[in-house]
Amino acid sequence: MIVRKKNIRIKKNKKAPKSEIRELERQWVEVHSHIDPNNAPYDKLEKAKELFRQPSVIKSLKELGLIDKD
Amino acid sequence: MRFAWPFLRPVLLIYLAIFMLINLVMSRNPYEYNQVAATRYDFVSVGKTRVEKVVVFTLIEDFGAMNLGLGDLLPDGSIDYGRVSDNGDIIKVLATVVDIVKHYTWLHPEAFIYFQGSTNERTKLYGRVLKNYYSSFSESFWVYGAMEEEDGVKFVPFDVTMSGGYLGFLVKRK
Image 1: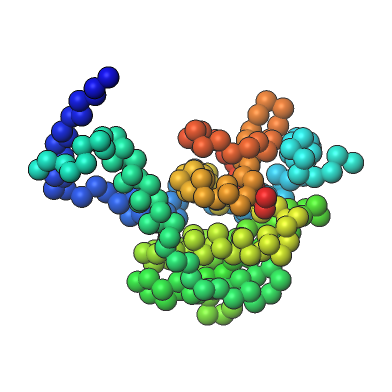
Image 2 (image 1 turned 45 degrees about the vertical axis):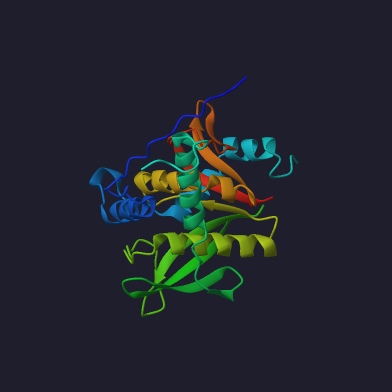
């Protein structure tokens, strides 16, 4: 079977695509500088401690084999 | 302009460009860091200004769950975890944090490293970062996300197809 290969015309994109890195930096600065009064920053460590005290969390860690079942 | 290699289709070129971009991003050299205490690492971010950064691992639970905190070192020696450096080098800073996590978990392979944002918005962004770099990160780590389910919060394997909904993230050395 003969497959005819097409010639592909590449259009020159004059405008450079937005850099993924710049976009990430923009988002990073945005979420770290903007504080929504309805979504105020909380103490991460306290939140984490609260989370890891929950029986459902411990159960899921055991199910995943990350901690001993005893 | 006619393309020299007609067997390469545009879709393939797009994949190639994305692959090269990811490689470019991932190959950005992290900063050098110092382990100044068993659970603390320091490094200097050199972007628009010079910012001393600190990564601290704090014990959450006795079974080895450690909280990961990234902050700026203040002149009085305290650490500000909420400050926005906007130093223009976030990729390099993140690459350094990943390197530090690799070093810490190499020393303590039993440790689970937990992190979340101090707002829901920030946690969502960390999820997006994790999603972008999952393929390289998952080579060295198991990655889990905390999700609110009917019977409470649970850790589940991180799903790159999910757009959000995680309360925090847990990584463990493979």
